[in-house]
Image (cartoon, rainbow over all chains, first blue to last red; front, side, top):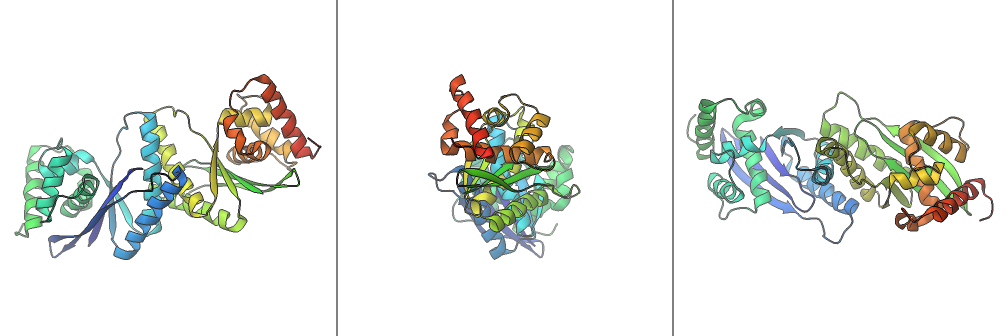
Length: 184
Length: 184
């Protein structure tokens, strides 16, 4: 099963593709889509839509995972994020990919053990878990982390937010077992 | 010149196409795109993107006009509007249409003479100006009004907000002359 994580943003949309085979996860590719800075809004959104659709059509993921939005800071930033998100989600559905959402806190917890992990910690852990040569750019690291969390927990992960310590501890152990290939 | 007005919304996206030939405007078509209510968010956004792209490719407008967003009421509604807007704008750019924005207040003023016109007043005036048999649905009326205002004023309309009474009066006279075909 191939899982595509996507971190939508109007300036930079990160993506990260992983593959799960026989209970092990391997890195396929990651990157950041950056619309031309001089282009107008509609053209930048078209760029994101077309860019992601090309990746979906080339790589054929079964599932895409995006961050769930709880509360944006203010109406202006919510609108800007919403616009990027709208282009991205339309593109994923156009590519025939099922879309799932995960909470940022849950992803950070699953990947680093800390719900409040910062960007550098996420990059370091994603690099280590996927045995990459270098830490991915922050947007791509977040996208890979979304994909990893989904691949580890499956669709049930969507229900798992805030279920107490034992569950988090088990989740962390499961993640390490998954990426190292140890028996669960 | 063909001008497509679009009023983006996640439940209902109105569109209205008019044509300007020899200084006169005629109605081409209008309607409302309603994504299937049972579908998930990504699928509804794909529906809007694909639906509008089909209209653009069939009708070949030179310009699309959408409402400028100043300040959404709250982050949640801004996010929802932003998502619909993102899918719509990406679609317009994918169809090769130039996208222009107009303020709602300016459109209401141009069409009804009142910046605070309500939905029913907009529907009535759009019906009258375009000599339609019946008032269009509200979302489509707003879309047609965007197209009419753009066709009347051209790209300069974007600069014309709040320029005083004389300008508004002239604008109203110009709109009536335009749609009735009287010399300006």
